[in-house]
Length: 156
Image 1 (tube, rainbow, N blue to C red):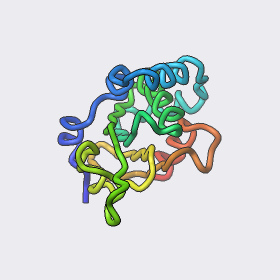
Image 2 (cartoon, rainbow, N blue to C red; image 1 turned 60 degrees about the horizontal axis):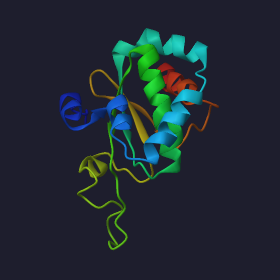
Image 3 (cartoon, one colour; image 1 turned 90 degrees about the vertical axis):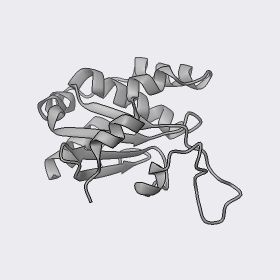
């Protein structure tokens, strides 16, 4: 099943808009991470070459510590490469449910479509909507998010 990137564009916001729309004190934490993070330049140069061929979707919540570390990096990646990064935000757990992790609404129904278990969930798609790979919470193979995305693209 290919993802409908047009539908994702309608329902998810650009990463910069997501950060701009956060409430305090969360917005301040996200902006601090964005201002202090140093991108790995070799990976950014590689991502620039592939930017028009890939699309990234992230699932996030303002209260999530891992999201506050990773989502601002995506804003920098988007700004420095032209790679389109969209965010489904506002995820809320459902502590009263024994069958569903997320309360819908306010969580977007896409949490079910993409089987979101942990956040941030980052999904890299090619421009045809084919999933190239996922990063769950944080990079696992490489020290930086941008290097991990490069490796996913290389393997696709």
